[in-house]
Amino acid sequence: MEITNKNKEQVLNHLTQIGAITLKNHVQETLEINEKEYPVGSEYGTDKGYGARLFLIKDVKQLIQVKETHSLCGLVAEHEIIIHEDNGMIGMFVLYMMGDDSAIALFLIE
Image (tube, rainbow, N blue to C red; front, side):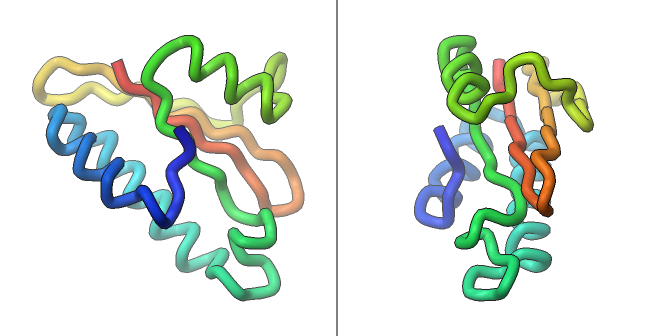
């Protein structure tokens, strides 16, 4: 599911509820970077396709759908971080740079 301004609080609350606090903080930090560096209404705003599009991925089917839809299959990620939560959950952050100040950020949860 894509993380948007409309559902970001719901996503952050969900991550808190399942104990994915480190992943939640990472999502929140990425959202804040988007809001600061690519504000809506600016020349290079997220509303004009700049900044990062964020996706919360819960299963392999969603991962494949997002990768196919955004032509990520076969691309090498710019950045990958494995996230170990205190409760034993494992998550992952994967960033694909798409050029022209745009990116796709995938947040995978176990």
